[in-house]
Picture 1 (tube, rainbow, N blue to C red):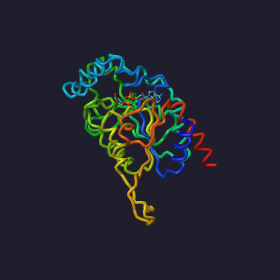
Picture 2 (tube, helix red, strand yellow):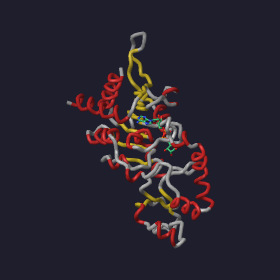
Picture 3 (cartoon, rainbow, N blue to C red):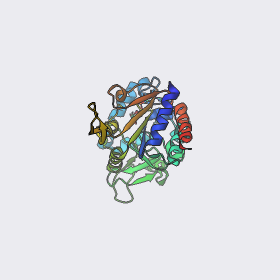
Picture 4 (cartoon, protein in one colour):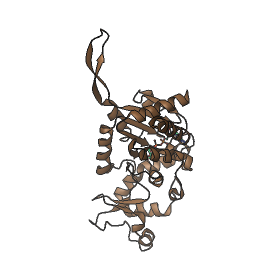
Length: 282
Ligand code: APR
């Protein structure tokens, strides 16, 4: 049954003209990074930490200097992400891009593992821990372009944008913080363009990211079909095939937004899907 569904997904991918992938923390758990709402997720284990996270952006807006001091002196709940490596799930998606099947990934993950796995066309919807961003001109910088420890020692926080003088923040998007315009617009365009959406390792409960599959689901195309009287008519049919690969069902499954769920680990399922894709492309 599972293998048949993986084969079906591979066939759908090969038949697609413009497939994209949406990913969440679940695809990185096999790299040793905890997710948020899974059975051993960061928020599941420490609801207080989640409450603090909800206040983070407010604190930044009130006093970015205090926010930065806290940021530079307390450990991240996700641990040291820069030391982590991609797993077979990340590599499988990069291979689908190389095969010309996957056109883009929109990820909620800030860990940079899709890029490390060799993926090119990536939209980091919630930003990246490896980058900083100006809150005025949205310029992004590599973290090492600023000597943050020196700014902390000399009490010269928050960092200032060398281009516009605006206040620089980590690129990670906090709860309540607007998604940067450029990424929000490009992601919407991808959701409008795609004819297949492969959604991997997300509980799909955080908005506005979780609205992307719903936007894609609204799209229909006209298709000539034989109706029950044997006559041909034009019918509006769903324009997008939506496939979930996740350890558990999500609201997308329950609301029938996705066409089907392949329930299991991304690191096990995605490589098998790629094997079938390669077989079908022969
Ligand atoms: N394979 C497949 N699914 C997995 C795996 C795995 N190896 N490991 C965990 N999962 C599933 C979990 O069961 C859960 O349904 O992945 C999902 C991860 O969901 P969340 O922890 O809610 O992560 P995500 O959807 O990415 O969260 C969205 O919330 O906290 C914020 O900014 C944070 O970007 C994050 C956003």
